[in-house]
Length: 143
Image (cartoon, rainbow, N blue to C red; front, side, top):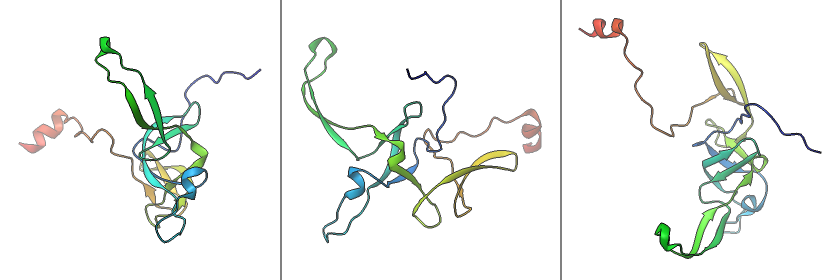
């Protein structure tokens, strides 16, 4: 019997990252000249516990939805992204633009993701970065 994992499960791929498919249906996409062009896209959702990701515009499936008048939901055929195994995608190296593996390093007291080329992968700006709160010392220095 399979045991249930406990605790926090993390992934090296984060929401908002640019990824490229390295296997599966989206890896075998072809352009108009007949050359294989694996799909590149942005991660919109991640399920680290099950090892799945949703990539914007990839693995589109159709769902037949019944109308629910109580919830003001219309019926019809809805297109949405399906979950894909996290092993089928790889992060894009910021230097070369090719698929890369990721490792973690501590730089200036912060834990950062680093590509194989040695380039730091910037944290994805999903929610919009907020300015850090100013301390009393900072406020006095401005005045």
